[in-house]
Image (cartoon, rainbow, N blue to C red):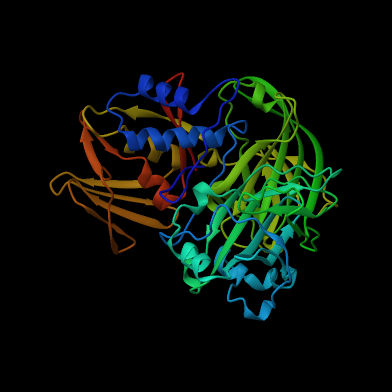
Length: 458
């Protein structure tokens, strides 16, 4: 789970790590690492540890629109037919027909003399939700402010809170701006809420724009008919030679959650290994189906050694009929609940493994040994020494790299490379930058501090 240019994280502290500490650790463990590498690895580390809760934000255009000091009062809702947002097509990929009937159109509003905020659409499930709302300028000055204020996501407070007496636990959300759908006096935004624990599907409250009165909010309905399968289990798992327990799994066509206990007490524990057996019998890894940029992990109880929820957003809307079973560590859970869970052995090439770090001096960051990771993955490669050309094939993708080139060939199509990306002969060993594996082969990677090794997850 890593950061892209359109992601931003709040600084977080825990009883074990802060961002500053992790940057310091990265500097100690690797020489010749750039600031970009440090940020990338720090964000990796944040997302591996649930106590480092993240608030991610994304945007499509450079401008964000809202004024941060508007005080809103209860107003009249607008008609949904005027909305030009298609929540499913804007924020999700795949067959949107699976969820079309589940999108709700509340059209409730709060407003003052200058601004009107309308709850446009809601797609809710027991452990996540997507909430679309609009902000409309009602005066010339307010409209100008909407158009010119580019710091909304940083300056404004938009929170989703539980109702009084509710048992719901809300752990974080991301914010989106629908730049292409905005009009001159009206802007659209979305909250993508993850890792909710809302078994009773209780409504929540949306507070906008630094509203100072606790009475000024929009009630967001959270009831859902989205098919969600829940499994209560008591599966013993192990990380770094220590035991922890996996207690619950929930899965629907948008996402999956896994709750574990005592995982956080294990130093440098990796996330549980997750696989999917598809209806055709093939095994897919988490990285093949899950959008790691929109996945997260967070504490569900006040006990720091207690219950943690791992949240995984699928890359595309899933038809649960296409998934035969979910495999967590070494146990297989059939989505047909009539079939009892059973142990299963997974191809060793699908498990995470260690690979040596190839260090470089100067401004460039660390590399991966091509021979090492290809053996671990079962990937194929060839090296043309005369033309300094690497051809790497894995999961149906062929990547061609020429040393010193600013472009690469992916399945016959030329694409630009970012700074420091490419193939290198370092200390007589063929190496590449690790980002290429992530970008083109759906492979995750992180650092193991104790041994200065890469951890590669297919």
